[in-house]
Structures are given as structure tokens and as C-alpha cells.
Length: 294
Image (tube, rainbow, N blue to C red):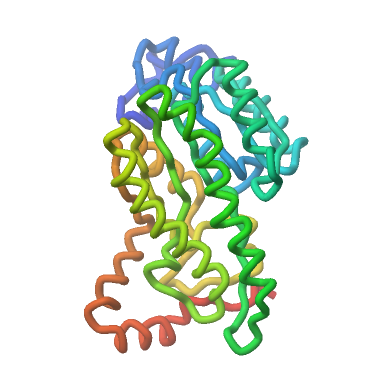
């Protein structure tokens, strides 16, 4: 049987680690001497790490050797994830925190510094999916979306920025959305909050480059997470596994890419920019907003 490591290194049964070591774990890669540990000993904070994209990203970062600070509201889920990472030879610290609560991110940053003395990567992933048609929209819905998706992300950024500036290096990873590129009817509050984040990410990328701090904006499409469990999607916009997004995202972090659009169907926005009426028609005909799962 032939298997592949995520680094692209091919291995046969003879090369496999002992049965008590998970095949693609950090320990297995050390045992094999294949250094796909391209983030070895770097410290990464991941918000919204208890499920979905955040959980998948944390596991993928750990496989590349990063030390993880896992932040979310559900402590039991974080602790279970930290044990899973430790079981694969990685290192993770579970920190209960809410990106909307003043001081929670500063506390997570301080715990990271106390443990390892540095912060190399922030993945500002925590988010909520607030839907409302314009004619039924309440200001409170916009505020809820902005509080988590925009202000929550920026609380995380502002909490790590002094440390990264002091180090003259760091990497900010901001979870935007393809809804920014292809706004879907009914997603107004979500689109508004992610558009604000996307715009500021592009500004920060230019301003912070001279200080040695990189910024990557990630634009996921429909990803199979609890956020959209209530939706059934058409074939043209199938839900992609969060593990695949995480793999592409971590590769983008390692390569220092400025932007990741995944799945590539997000590039439909180029057509929409050139011919807005056709773009609007395709969104309607393809029913990209999906249907209630029930």
C-alpha cells in the first residue's frame, strides 16, 4: 500500500512508523526524519478553534510543528482538541475566551508569551453567520455580525500586534468569505461584516509589510461546518470539507501568500465584476443561497 504525507513525500509500508504512532502525526514525521515540520516551534493562536474551520486549521498547523494556543468559548471542546494534538506529538494550550469580551484576547496573548515567549501566527477565525433579508433587517443583526466577525477579529489583531512589532516578524491570517466577492441575497449582515474585514486586511497588508508582518486574507466558499449545517447547497456550490481548506490555508501561510480563494469557484466574482447583471442572474439561477436543510 502506498500512502502520502501532506508534504508530498511518498512512503511505503516499510517506511511506516510503529503501529502505536499515528501515521501522519508530528511524532511519525520526526520518526521518519522527513521534515515536513515547516512551522517547527512557531507559536500560533487560533480563535474559534473548538469546531469547524478553526479546529481543522489547528490540527493542520500542529502537523507542521506549530505550538497552538486554542481560543474559543467551549472549553471542553478545546481541551479535547488539545489532547488530540498532544496524542499526535504536538503541543497545544486550551484557553477559554470570547473575541467579543474585552480582555479575553489580551489574556490569551499573555498566556502564550508566558508559555513560549513569542507569537508568530494569529489565525482570526472566530465568526458567526447572521442572515437577514434587507426588508426584514434589524440594526441589531448588523451589530451582532460586526461585533464578532469584524470587531472580534480586530480585537485579536490588536492584542498580538505589539508583540509582533516588537519581534519585527509575525503573520496575521484573517478569515474573510467569498460572500465578499459574490454577495448572496439574504446574507446582508454577514456580507457587511466580512467586507469590512477584507478591506481592512488589505490595508494592513500594505502598512505592516515594512515591519516584517505578513497578512493573509482567506476567502472560503461554502465549507461543511456547523455554521451552515442548516443549509442544503446546490451542486454548483457544494460544501467543501474543512480539512481541505485547512490544508490549503496552511500552505498559504508557509508560502506567505497574500490571499487564498477556496474553492476556486469563488473566482466567479471576476465575471460579476465585468458583467454584474449576468453575475446576479447566475446567483439566482444556480440558487447559490441554498435551501433550508429540513
